[in-house]
Length: 426
Image 1 (cartoon, one colour):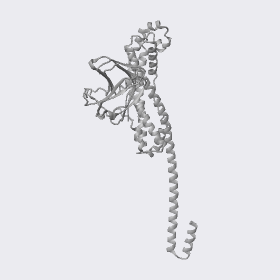
Image 2 (cartoon, rainbow, N blue to C red; image 1 turned 135 degrees about the vertical axis):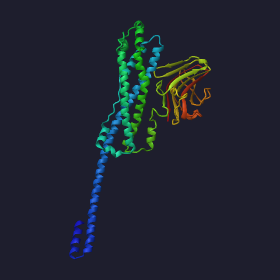
Image 3 (cartoon, helix red, strand yellow; image 1 turned 135 degrees about the horizontal axis):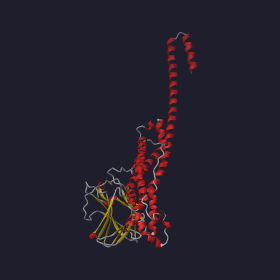
Image 4 (cartoon, one colour; image 1 turned 45 degrees about the vertical axis):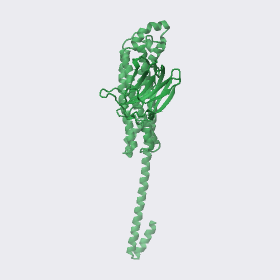
């Protein structure tokens, strides 16, 4: 094409047809410019493709790192839940038992071992550090994926600081406990060394002194009251991490319809919404809830913290109620939280013999204490079963200002039931 233009130009110049020559000259210039623009466009396309491939590579590394993080966080969360679930049974046994059985000593030994095994969550930061250092993170500037990445790694840092403080207290407490010079401490560390029944009887005062020592209770309390906050943060980390992985693996950089659903269970500890898990593995979450009870004529009954189950044993009475409520607040008579975003109350229950009847109720801040709250009756079997109650069944309870988040009401008949889990579901 260019050779043709040159021949035409030569012919026009020789024939002294300057105006026609000028027209063809302009055409030649336009052709050259178009060629340059096409070349630039191809070069830009190639450069953009190289940059996108590099960005994809960095994001894939982050996705791989977070998948491993999620496994670690889930393992650590499960371990912490299991240890926390042991504490109420251990402390209640130590408090009420006149005689510690061999199984009690072994359970205490396993619990102390689990408490002293200091676990830390360590995140793989290599992918995120690489994309920051490369400058490619700016390719995500202003997009939802960038915001979610920063939220995730800020949470990683926050968890690291909180775990350091949490474990430091446990380390010092265990050091104080171990340095007391307890006589017969060997039998706490190695309960299988205890011989016959007579030896176990002779050891009772020593074992009780060790397990009821104030330094031991520092460990129990630190685990039971401070551990739940770390569990919530690990849950939040997994929620954000799973969404980042989904977005990266599907080449999504802005939130889609699935994002809101996937992130809805992220929990702001200092927010107005109520925490979903009231009782887990038989232990009420003492960070977010207080438990209480009342009965007609103050007639006594039993609450037993078993191993991974919470048992209520009530005698025949006009009425008995065991409840879980938002924590006490000196400034507010009936502190409330907003549970209106939840749809279902999920309970895992069983009766002692089967056929036990119990009513479940909630109470908002304005509900009177006269038993008029809406109740949902349940008939239990002697096996663990899951009961899902739509929150609409508790109308007209105001879920935006919920005070008592779960209660079990017994009327007239003697009953013994066990509770494993109480959870709100969206």
